[in-house]
Amino acid sequence: MKAFRLRFLALGLAASLSGTAAHAQVTSCYGRAITVLDFRNPVLVSGTALSVGAIYRFANVAPGVDARVRINAISAGASLAIIDRDTGLIGNFQPELAGADARSADFTITFVVAGTATPIALDVAASGIDIDGDSASLREYAEFSTPFAAYVVDSPTNLDINASGPSVPANVRFESRTNFTAPGIDPTATANIVSILYTSTSSFQYRIGTLGTGNTVRLTSLDFSCPALALPAESTVVPQDFGDAPAAYGNPAHDIVAGIQIGATNTSEPARYNSPTATGDTGDDGVTITQLRRSQAGTATVTVSGSGGRLQAWIDWNGDGDFADAGEQIATDVADNGAGDTNPATGTIGVSIPTPAAATLTQTFARFRWSTTSGLGSSSTASNGEVEDYAITIFGPAVLSTTKTSAVYDPANANLFAVPGNDVLYTITTSNIGTGPADANSVFVVDALPATVEFFNGDVDGAGPATGAVAFTQTGAGLTFTLATDLRYSNLAGAPASFAACAYTPIAGYDPAVRYVCLNPKGTMLSGGAPAPKFSVQFRTRIK
Image (cartoon, rainbow, N blue to C red; front, side, top):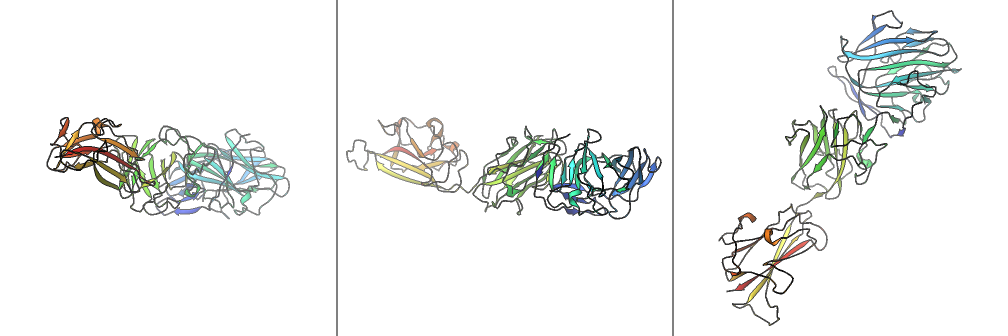
């Protein structure tokens, strides 16, 4: 007996998304996009009607698609009374099984290009309707061949799974556990319905049968839209990858298909994580996002593999717990090296991220989905690929405030005055009073020396702890400062525009040629807190 995991989902009723004369009707069925099929007016194309080997064609089950149904086997003592009843649920495939006691009939259903025998792969929901009994001792069952992505039954259900074993190991049997009879074919008897979700399938095996004793003719019904179950319970048969953002963002899932993924790994999970920090899935390793700042452009770099993949991505800019607001989808159907990919390397997609001026400054979330399915939403189920969720923080601008003070250098407390020949100690303090950190290595301080002083290129504090011409201290700024690389000078008349433009090398001791002192501490200057992060530099000059 095969074992299956069962999880209960709060799933809405299926709703038609599109359907025109030119395009197949597509419906969302328990989070998956499926093609709706309509089986009517079968035509015998080979073999003897209602006999083993007979093949019937159902034309235009979807625009441009036919279905071929082959009768593979009919058990001893059984017969097919009709291949497809054309009353009631006339768009369903509805063979009638006659005979006595335990009996069965097997079919292969193949989807082909209209008017040909060329197979075509579809995503479909094949749903056995009204799998019940005869109110005496007869019980019906339906079998479906694997592989399929998942099956869905109602909760509670009247169907047992493989209780009496499938006819062949590759099938899964769904049998009525009672002899309850729903009159006719009743699509509202949801406890007697199972929906099989096939992905990229051109053919599958289908068996109808009965268990027990009795000789009533059994009408069966196979639906290819999406049954409305009261409390659907889905069981996955193939491994799946799930998102791990909080539950408010929906619960996307991807059937795992080798070679179609984000990053180096695509892990299978038993259930959705809904982590408050989107860190539940250890396989999320394929997305790098630059620091995002209000009103500035950032970049996401996404490593992908798999032919025919399409990238969808979202950021919850306003932090309201969804990806539904205008501008929150930042990538739509982006193919590797296709339109919207800013990275020329094969296997890497670059996504430009224009950050809104009003983006939330609290933790929010980003979602990236890679699949061969175009137009994939933020919370549906995909037949391949991977989803990766990330918690991100958006920053406001860095606002640097600088003050400069001076005092007579008087280490011996001799009560010196600011007169020619005495030294002056300058202190420059820079604080980040903004809501975001400064860009890495971007802090550049230029101080113009008054014409009345000359710079001292020596030990700024004599016997103190400093050892160079400038002393650097900080409180919570997160920077580093190296005298050899982060301190420069300029002797030009005008202020240098960049740190590189500070190119003068002063002489030892007092140097009147120094016009500007240039400082470029390294790292990202942090923000936030009280007091604000800050750093200070001190240097000496002599009054002329």
